[in-house]
Length: 400
Image (cartoon, rainbow, N blue to C red; front, top):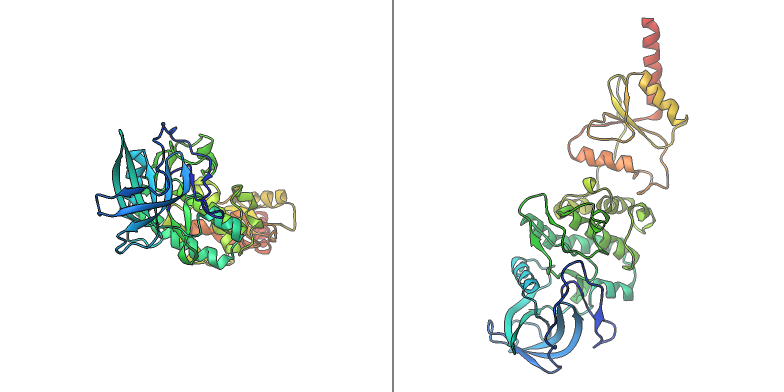
C-alpha cells in the first residue's frame, strides 16, 4: 500500500491520518473532496466493487482507504485503494507495478481503473495492504534490527530494484516511507510515483526527489543527473536506518564506524554513502557485495621500489615524511591515495578507529575495489619497505 511523495501510512492509531513533507516536484492543484467513509468505487476492468472502510493515509497526491473487494475472487479480504486526481503518478505506479508483477518483494497492485467523479476523474489503484505500515512506523515501534535480518531483507528488496536497473529504470525515492512491512514482517518495495526510465547510462534529470533522502551532491544542486548509483545511496541509508532503528536523520559516511554491525557491512554501507564515483554502480553490485565477503588482503613481495607508484596507509614507526623521502630516493613515485595507477601499498600498523575496523581503512577499501576491477596492487609491510630503501641506497653507493 503506497502513495506518492507526501503520503505516509497511519499505523499505530487506527484511523489516524499521517502526513509527511513533500518532495521537489509539482504543487498539487485543487482536488475534489475525498469520498466519504462507507462509499464505494467500481472497477470497470475487473467488475469488482471496493467498499471503502476507513481513510488510513492522505497526502498531496491522493488518499488511501482500507477497503473490502466484492466479489473477492483471488484477492485478499482486505486491500488498500489509492484514489488520486493526478494521472501522471497513477500511470507510473500502474506501469511499474505491471512491470514488477513477478517480483515477490514489490508491493502488489491488483487492479487499476478510472471512475468519474462529477466533472473530474478519479484514478484508482487496488493495492496490497501492508499490515505493519511503512518502515518508518515499524522501526519507531520495534527499534533497531539485528544484522542477519537486515542483510536478508535488504538483499530481498534489492531484487525488484535490480529488475528496474536491468530495465534501465530508476526508482528515485527509496525512503523508509516507501518501503512497507507486510505479512510476516517482510519488507516490500513500493511507491513508483516518480520512477522513470533512462535513455542512456548518464541518467535522468534530477527534477523529482525527496531532499531528505537524496545524495548531498544532488540535493545541493552540484549534480543534475540521477543515476543507478543514487538509488544505491538510498539503499545504504535504509541499511543504516534498520540497524539504528532511527529514520529521523540521514547517516553520514564518517559516522558509519559507530553502527552496531560487522566490519564487512560497515564497508558496504560506507561505499554506498561515500564518494559518488566509488559507489556500487547498480543494485546487482550491491546485492553481490552483501552476499559475498571480499577476499582478505595478503602481503606480497617486490624486489625494488624504482619505477613503482606507491601509497602509504596506517601508522609507521617513523614519521611519514621520512618514509616519503626514502621512497623518492629509491626511485618510487609517491601517491597520497591509491588509484588505478598504483603498484604498491605500504601498510603500517592499523588504526582501530577506521571506518570498518582494522582492515577497513579508506585506502584498504579502495584497494579492494580496484582489485575487484582487475588492477594488480602489491601490499607490503613497513619492514619490507625499509629493507628495499636500504637496498636501493647501497646500489647508489656502489655506483658512486
